[in-house]
Image (cartoon, rainbow, N blue to C red):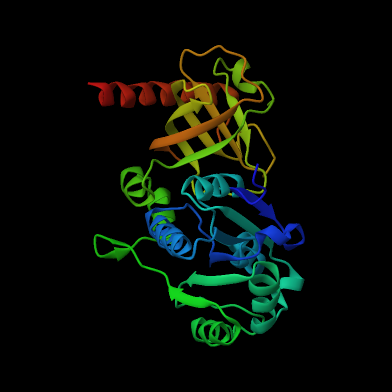
Length: 317
């Protein structure tokens, strides 16, 4: 097996000699939406011309998360989902560089040396002409072109994709999801919006309320969605089930502030702990709210389920 084949590299310290020599791009790629996919096609085309691997460089945490913390916008996808989507798009490797104080304090020139030249020995960089980097943000497209001309790599501006006269961006998709406009978000993502994860043991409270749920812990991931939604759930065996999902902190039953994705599947009784699922969102039913009692919550859950079943029956008619 070729050790340089499609792979995920976590950290500069895991770069090996066979990773040197590539065509690369740098970005957040949150959502891997249609705009990102156009950049990836551009990257792969240039890589084929050079007969070199196409590499995407991402940061964890994303730089704006490092600087803004909890005030940073919610992500469209978790790192695992992003890496899978990037590799599925046809890139050879994804290099995830830890964004920490050491990286933040690098000058623009030091970043080029450490990451692009010493780390990857890039031959061509595809990057937006608004890209800024380095501790003093002095690094820009012009500097990359200048250093590239001196050190033997080319620099190309990324293409921009517009739909309905507006640039496709993660921010635009995030706003659509927050409004509950899943159809328009899907048009920009190129696929329905979903969250994937493993089903974990919960408090079994849903079962006691007659509404058993499959729980996915979102941990540090903060979803752009909050509330109750109609969903379909895809299992790895290819089966798909309809249901209703809550994304939030369950204010009626939990003092915990950690976000959780809870899914109740209709007419479903299999034991599925540990299964990896993909939860696809279709419509918003309501905001998350705190109820005065579990009885009140139970009544609302039955209303949610009835509304979700109506939604799916309307789709199938």
